[in-house]
Length: 293
Image (cartoon, rainbow, N blue to C red; front, side):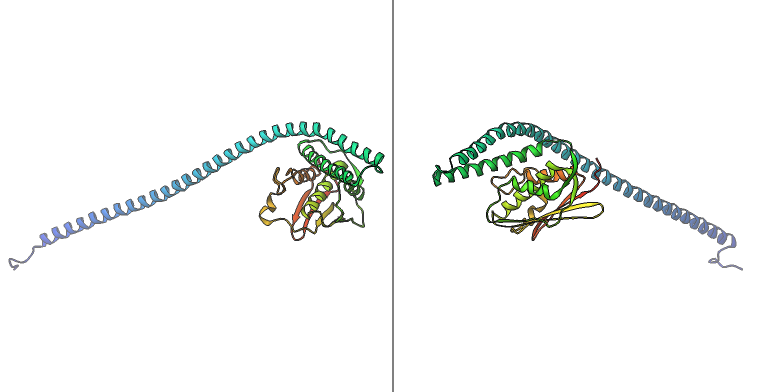
């Protein structure tokens, strides 16, 4: 017999069923929450991917804007340099002829009347000659830089080109140029390579302040001709070493800033390369024996 506190069999079954239903309901809710969490995690992953894509697009857009701005700046500079170049070429050409007349006239006067010219006047003539030579050299730098002419190549002696270059510049008494003992032959545009030597030698003379030694070396292998110009000057400041081939960059009060850019352009025309190193300052030029235009 059951007491009043006893639970009937049917009531127990009913409670078990209710508990089972509640368990199933909780499991269903847990499953739904689990699926919701998985869905949220997937959405977070997707959101992270979208964020990364957005950041990449923003970076790309920023770079594109920067490149466009740089391109517009370069285009403006190119147009400006083109205009300046045309004007400079005209001025340089028009000024070069009167300067040549001045130089030649002084030379004729010195030759014909050297015995009658007082020493102080001869010194003035020398000063005029040096000043006009410097102006002619600077005008030649401008013309060489702005003129883009095709190469006229043949095989030449590099020693003969060097000698011709030295004869075209004023070498101070305290400057010693050590020529190479050997010679190499190079397929090149003689006038342009002569301009290379002239610019490098003048650059070295100015760097040494008209006193010191310049050493020129030639070498070659099966494929490349190498020539170097070394000076005993103080060297190039490290903070400007990467700027020396930029047009119009100069540390000299009387320089054009076109000498070394002209050298680099000529070497590139010959499919070559130019390098510079410090302590001591050495310009090394490498030109292939077989040019590819």
